[in-house]
Amino acid sequence: MCEVGTRPPLAAERGEPPGGAAAAAERCRDMGEQPIFTTRAHVFQIDPSTKKNWVPASKQAVTVSYFYDSTRNSYRIISVDGAKVIINSTITPNMTFTKTSQKFGQWADSRANTVFGLGFPSEQQLTKFAEKFQEVKEAAKLARDRSQEKIETSSNHSQESGRETPSSTRASSVNGTDDEKASHGGSAEAHLKSENDKLKIALAQSSSNVKKWETELQSLRESNARLSTALQESAASIEHWKKQFSACKEENDQLRGKIEELEEQCNEINKEKERNAQLSRRLQELETELQDKELELEELRKQGEIIPELMSECESVSEQLQAAEKKNKDLEEKVRTLRTEVEENKHRQTNLKTELKNFLDVLDGKIDELHDFRQGLSKLGVDN
Image (cartoon, rainbow, N blue to C red; front, side, top):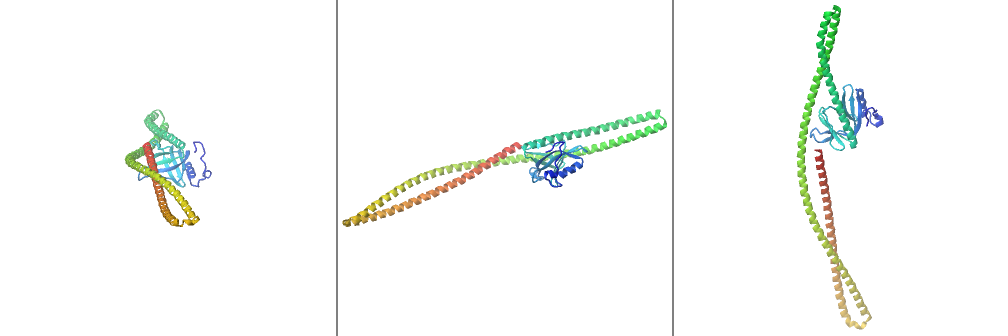
């Protein structure tokens, strides 16, 4: 930034291309304008079709400067993006700079028939720009008042000169010689003509100013009408968001009911886990019993090998062995069945966990959307 009395950096010092903001500032100085305050911001303009959406006027932050024209005693806000002039706004006493957020401000320019918006990197820069806007606005008002006083003073002076000139001419014609009469008469006429010319110029300027003020008044009326329309649209938007909020609330209630259903399913899953644990314990018991039967079978085999005289009993032992093997097969088949049930229960439990996790993720997303929606409503309420 640069304040009054500081030299603005050249284009080469800022790394800007020729013909950019620095060149525009040089052109303004050549025309009698001097920069009094400079900052950087993102420039926006109101959408002319909707009158409520912002359209970026620059792709990145650009230089925005206040300029003072000493010849016209006027102030302008100028911003250039490359070779394109994106802001050329003459400040009038009727303008107002409004802070709409901590880093964003706007003002309406009736002459340009648009609304400019500036986004600043920090709240401090926005505050400085707003203070400078108010200062320049007061200076423009003071300059306008002084101009009106000069016009009125010039008009009064011309009228007084017009009234005094005939008497002085008459006095000269009575008391002076013929040469003095001619000299005084010509001087009075020239002075009167000069004053009349000045008065005509002042009246023309006054008429021009009246037309200009009438144009500004009409623009302000149109701007007020657009702002009223925007306010009505904002109220309609608020009603729409209220309906959306009610719909989201109903959806939230439905999701809560779904959560209760899932909690019940989780309880069923816990019961299923208990049944699986019982089946696992039963499976271990059956495996232990199978090992005991295998040991018993092994002992019977040893007895069949060691005692040849018990051949008569071998058939019964064989029958017992066959029965035991058949029972062993039955037990193995039962074990496989139990293992299959355990795997199915585990798979079912995994599916239920996955479904529960997906639902919780969807629920978190909906809750985040509801939170963002509440923040949007809060922000909209603050803006209004």
